[in-house]
Amino acid sequence: MIVSVRSAVCVLGRFPALAGADLDIAVGEIVLLSGPNGAGKTTLLRMLAGLVPIRSGTASVLGSNLVADRRSHRRRLSFIGHDTFCYDDLTVAENLRFAARAAHASRDAASNAAEQFGLGPLAGIAHAKLSAGQRRRLALAVAFAREPELLLLDEPHAGLDAEGRDLLDNLLRSAPRLGQTVLVASHELDRTRTIATREVRVVQGLLEGGLVGSGSTAARSDSEAAAIS
Image (tube, rainbow, N blue to C red; front, side, top):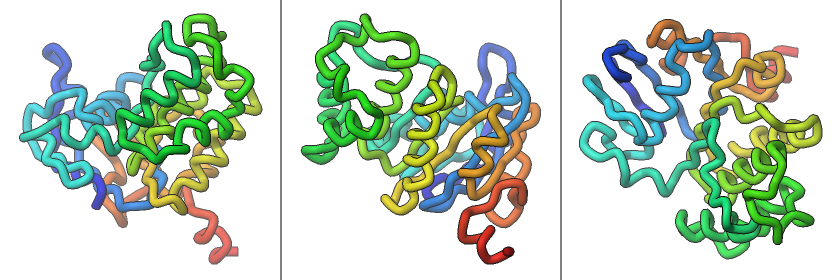
């Protein structure tokens, strides 16, 4: 399993944002996290990225024990939250090159990501001068430029226009063929369910269907759908 979590508890302030979560994710899965606001979806993603400590329980991501070490696996994943994590004074191209180098990605990773998200015409423009939608595209391009084994995405469609949403969906569908695994939290269920291979519902800090074999049937892979039809 690329992700294995057992009885994980995370506390924000005095509030248990995760209250004994169990989760398995196999290589190549696209897992949708659904659930109401405040249920713990963002905390789960941040915990797996090593940004939130575990109060109790166990968690392993990409072979790293997050209880003992929350940092060593970060180069091998990309996390997209509400912030872009880009540098205002760097151009689009510079942000992409910086991210690719930091993750030890391939030589062409930055230029490939720019092309995938249609950022070529904006290559020389500083992040600070981009529109909100352009910043969102750059943030996603930075995530892909890192060539991550694991993508952790929190409402990735937010702020994108229709073209950007379609570009992102196509890239997520192709991620398993590239050896990538995706965990995406979204309220846009109709759209994201067409991409996901499994759905996990987060309710009051607990996960429903978090273990392989117990997931929701709401999301199926294309191959499963073909077999059924």
